[in-house]
Structure formats: C-alpha cells, structure tokens
Length: 397
Image (cartoon, rainbow, N blue to C red):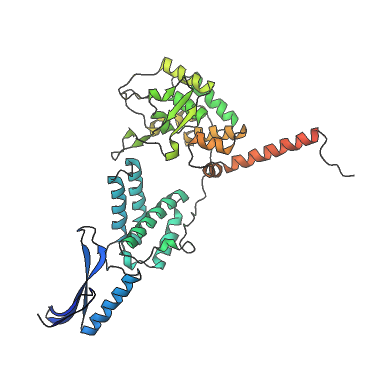
C-alpha cells in the first residue's frame, strides 16, 4: 500500500498508489458539490509524482472552491448539454409539442457549426465569435432562438461547475448578433385590396374557410386561435369572444388543439362588434357542424383544421382575384390588415396591444412602427389644417 499521511480539516489523505506500474502520490478530497446522478457529494482525486506536488495541487483546488472558481474536468460536449436542457423542458411540460419541435430544429441549425461538437471546456472566445459571425446568415428571429439556447447551455455548464463563467454575461463582446438579412416589412392589404378580398369571400360561397378569414380580418385573431375556438367561447349575450388556446402541431406533425395560446398574453377576451356578430351568426346558421370536440370550425371529418390548410385557400383566393401578389401572400396579413386599419382610425397602441394579444405595448409599436409613423404624420397634417382654419398660423411679412 505504501506510506500515507493524514491531513487535518477534511483535506484528505496523501498516500502512494501503483498506477500502470508506476508509483504515484494520491489524495482524494470531498468537495461541497453533489453529483446530480447519485445525489452524493463529489470526490476529487489528485495525482502527483511527489507528496509536495499533490499538496500544492490540493491547496489550489481548495482555494478555487473557496473563491468559486473551481471547475470539474469534463469532456461533455456543447450539443449534449443543449439537448438535455431541451428534453428536460419537454418532460417537465414546460414546452408544448410545437415549442419542443422548434427548439430541436434550432439545435439542428447550431449543429451545422463545429462549436456544437466541441467539449464545453475547450470552447474559446474566438470559437464563439466565429459562431456568432456564422449565424448572421439567419434572420433576426432565428438568431434570437439560437442565442437563447446557447445562453441556457452555458448557464447550466456554469451551475454544474463545468465552466467558470458564461461568455454571454459579457454583453459588450457577446451581445446578440444582427442578421445580414433585412427584416421583412409587415404586409397588409391596402383599402382597395381589402375591399376586393371582402367582396370575394362574402359573395362566393364556394370558398372554404371564408368565415375564418373574415373573423381574422375584423378581429385581428391569429388563424390558429380562430380554428381552436370552442362553440362555448362565443358569448353573444355579453358580446365577447374568449381566446384561450391555439392550433398547434404534435411531434407527428399533425394539427391538434393546444392547451394554451401562442403566448401568455394571448389568453384574452375580444369585444364583438356588430360586424363580427353578423359574421358569426351567419356562419352558425349556414355552415356550422356539431362535433364531439365542440369546435366552432372543423373539417369534413369533424377534426380541427390546420393553419397550413386555410393558408393554401387564402393564397388561392388572392390568386384568383388578382389581389396584391396573389399566391405569394400569407393569411397572417389579415391580422396585420386589422391592426393597420385600427391605427389609421386612431386607436391607441395600448388598446391595440391588448386586442392583438401582445405581451406589451413595445411589441405593437415595433411591429407596426411604420404604420404608426404614417399615422403621426396624418394627424400632424390634420392639426395644421385645424390651426389654419382658425387663423392660428403665422404669416411673416
């Protein structure tokens, strides 16, 4: 066994051990950290050619522990921690099927760069900078999703003592990068295009989903929210539509009714004006089909309708009636058109944010900034005309 010497204060025992035919000095030290798998405190084994070398290494470990700079040696790769984090969120029901699927797709984008297969402890600042430059080829929305996963992965690594610090805590060098792609502008129908669309879907009964399109156009609801409406969500007595869930996709890619809306703020009540009330009553008296799911809208098999299905019909209608860019358009522009008309009519951003289900007013202002800018100019012009009419303007001689 060889000689060994006891050390005080729980610093372990230094002793000799035969390792691969060589005599090494060894000590084992119990650290104040717990193994997540066994639930027991971790033990650190330190090797050296001499007793003094082991002693020096041990004192270094103790100093690092006391100053929170200690890290365990680990060969765990970035992608493994990231995947574990995503899977755990799904198992704990923190992620819906659709969110889980999106995060896995985001991880696949990360895995196209070499950093994903690197051991976390070997990732350098230059590796991370190279990665950030690499992801600028994606849109800002995708970059934000990638950045979120990277940040969470590093946070977990720090908590597990795999890394000493999270690179992304440095918001000067490692703030979120910007895309090389220009953000797409919000597209809404012009007044003339909206008139064309209303005439097309209100007069021609052959078009399926026309009532869903009209509801989106006159309430600003997302198509997933409309297709997930329960018949009991329609309250004619109090003139309210209750929005509490949306259509989502399962892991099998099939449409299903989600338990929640797209965002927490998505759960809301929309006041039913006379136009919306008329649309709903017309639908209920002509096309509504009773079904076991109690859905307001369902397909011929009495199942929920996917947003992709309605979008294809929307594109077809626009193509047939030569509205805007026809088949290139997307049904989400109905929601944008509703918001645009609201802003043009003078609706405050704070009110619109609640109707649209945005988390805060800043989201509404950012999404529709150009529309609000035009709205401001219109009202400045109106203000000037008012002053001029009442002879309150200045004419220098």
